Image 1: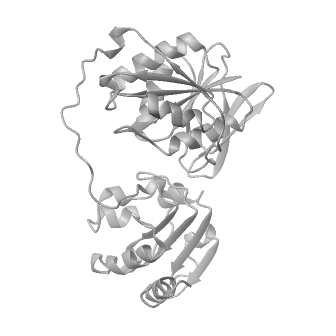
Image 2: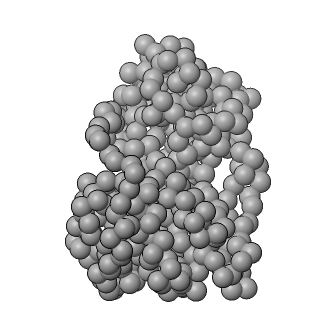
Image 3: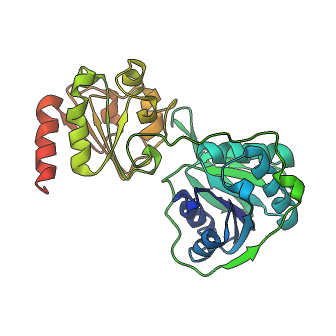
Length: 319
């Protein structure tokens, strides 16, 4: 089986999810190839080759300095036609999802999104993904072996690849691939916390149980004491307490951190969908019957205005 991993980069820096995708592919015992598209792909390709990238296909062009769906789809379509992989995988970020969807449409291949596990069954690659708010775990396999199977992976669901030898191959594609009706006019960096929610190893999220936006600093102090990112429920985002980029849930970010702490979140299904694959979940709520306790590893029943400051002080002391 031959698997092509699409590694993402931004401003000449590899996205950490690329190493998770390599780890997922390498664990299958398949022949791994990696595609890296950038203005200058050579140094990124060398880094990927040292982390189990296998044959790293490097494409360099100024037009690849920013993400352009039309150009990247054209370039990767040529690479897929040339190398004939059985499957193509990428991280489940917005860019990866849109790119693989476009490639699946162009090639006629099948697609599975948000995979939390991969395995080979009777020679077929099977993607395991949650559905219906995590109530059902489905297993999806491509029905046409003559076309590639496109799979996006849930970020933080797979272990990053360890060090491993690889080979860098400088690829070329048709000049027409770099022609596009779309043009990036301006790129604006989003302000706020340095680490994206999807990439954070620790997250502290809050809901209506903190009673008002004036109490967000209390939760932020707990997050700071843990070195965690700040998340929120849909209810408080809809109420205008905090920006949408902090929202965790079905209509927000899907996260899988090592530690997920909730403060005053009851546990509506919309929220549970986005965080229940976290490794350790600690929930603070005064309602002992709150649904959040059904998925929590540890539950603390009590007043958040007493518990959160006490925890913050303990963590600041190194406890």
